Image 1 (tube, rainbow, N blue to C red):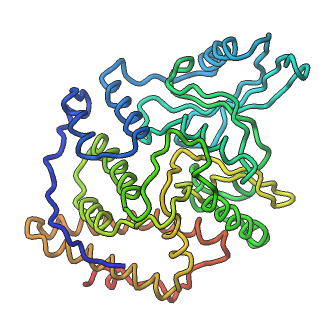
Image 2: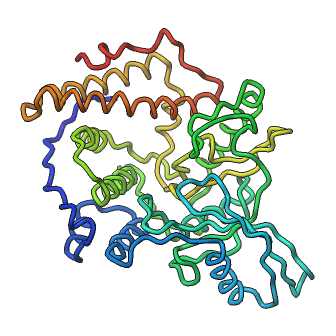
Length: 390
């Protein structure tokens, strides 16, 4: 891993706050040109900005969503139906989720009763993603890994207030019943017994995702990168850059440094693979009695790219991982200390922000490593003085 930022960062003028709140078509086009990304992501983010100056945020109650659901069902079902037990679902923190029971008559199979989940984009979502991509990838993976069965998708909010997806309810838990974690699932402690059962499944299912034959899959809303290039990683980096530029409320010089390093170290696609994009504890369900994984969820960040980097990181020795971390920490520290325009107080504030952000990163690392049976050795943890000393 190179810790050197090779290019001379030319940081464009930031967008004014007023332009973020009420962006003109010219501002939106300038952002699109500055951060080219996948076509479907571009469409969703552009939609968000074009609607930003509208009537403002509004909340949705169960009655409104149930009425929208019934409007859709009148159009897609050929027979009478009944919606029962509409209720909010916890989890899925970036999306609005409602569980319900649907009863209808199937001309081919008689009366049907199904427990289903409505998954809808929230209004003015920071993490604007595509329900159509989620619909396609879950459909494609049926039979390869455990996923819900998708029923219907409202791609552009024809029936619902926002784009939405309906799929089957899957039995299972996202965390042990006695475990405590944050709402998004970060930092789940599965315990030694469940880890032993879940870890082999977790890795096996990841391998199945990465070796899935994407060439034969109908993933029409996904961009297919060229083998030997870095465009896939650049698309993902630009998507994150664009989200930050469209919604940030302050300047963080450290992010400019990180963006530059990432662009200088984009991984090359050696084989086009499906990448989940958020594969971790909290995004899969399991049966707590048997320990069997029952569904992999939250596919909205999935993309076509290279899975090699994940495999390389998983296969790296502890010493290699520590060395890479030290190199990157030193590069960031050196870049901050050698920047003449930052006074000492500003540099200290940035360093404190890095330390605060590291607490979240530690939770992420543990959520990723603990299901695999790893836990960091206390002796390997560096002091803060060592981290920030070039």
